[in-house]
Length: 231
Image 1: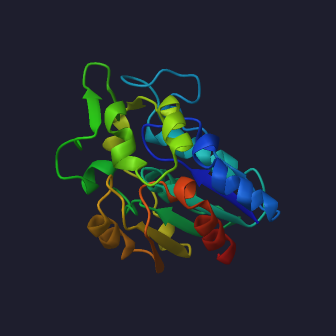
Image 2: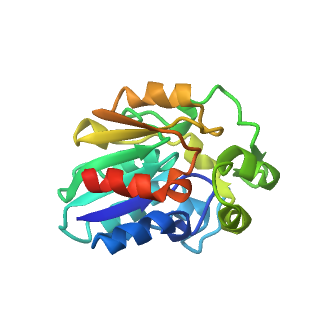
Image 3: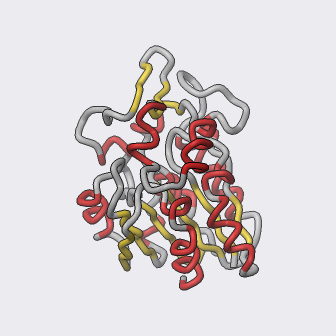
């Protein structure tokens, strides 16, 4: 079994965001990888106007998924669910999707279809540069309130400005319609309200709820590891 972690919006260094859960999986003999997302500047290309967007993120994740034939579970976190919907479609090695506080878009839907028409208060949008990011002063209280001090102190160094193009680009496939899927509702999430998560979760085959904030793989890695092993 292999796990492919797809991180959310406005962050970089996916291996850091997933490291606590990845290390626990490795102890059980399960390998994992966290692909770099070009729209977050992780491919060495500048984000923003004219820069990489959702199609490039999809291609990067799909390349990793197609690199081997080992049975694979794909974990999409938040925006990562948008990427996963298209990237995992039709890839024979993928056996299960785990969506964490995430989106399950229908074909033709984009990230903006899940919003209320305006940017969230914890986001800073620069229309001239064509990027958006998390306001650093709101990072901990919104996304990491249940994480320990070490994680809180390190997280800001792993934020990224992301191309705003990803919010309006539609997906061309919906892998969750083809593959078994589990939705992990984070009941203490202050970034994506639990009531919205429960609506999104109706599209999944099964639902698990955890008393955790937006990043349970950092705050409760044992619980996320156990869920993955059960899949």
